[in-house]
Image (cartoon, rainbow, N blue to C red):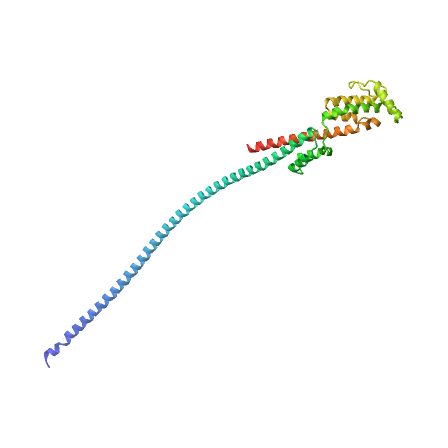
Length: 295
């Protein structure tokens, strides 16, 4: 046997051991490399998550801040817009109020002028005793069915359609009424026929009318009816128709009968004057209120 053949197993064993050692080292290196790679990946993943989380948090904070700023800006703009709208609404309300006042003033002005014109036309007719049917209808139409003027128009007697005698007319007419009234007052009691009428005429001419300052209050003092007529005549001359009518209302019998027509006409004039006074006053107040509302 060759001696070199005897030495071969040793190197082979050494080589095998070295090979095994190298393989072990390679395996360890691979394991170590894999472990480091895994650790690196874990660190990288962890850092990535951390950085991502921080970035997301920072972005969310920034986004929230920007959203809050935008919201605050929007609310401020909304509030300013609301204030502007409120101011515009207030101005619109003022303008609408002024427009309503203007419309009311214009409407009231037209109505006031229409009523005043109709009232003036009616007064012109009634004050001179002319027919006033058209003017009464015109004032009724202008004033309507309600109110002070409408009520005053209703006070005007129906005779106003044909004309109500004036105070001057009534004063002139009372002279005849007074004379006839005295004759009737002088008729002896119980003698109302033709003879009595003649006696009344004679006694009226022969007797002196009592003074209105000292009229008889009883038949013992004198003819009471004659005294009433004298007092009524005084009031008629003074233009105080109301007191004259009050006196004539005290008459009785034939004397009351003969003065009845004049008394009715005087009463119509009294009612007419009262109605005119109310109408004129109400027209003055209407125009005054209109001027005050327009100033």
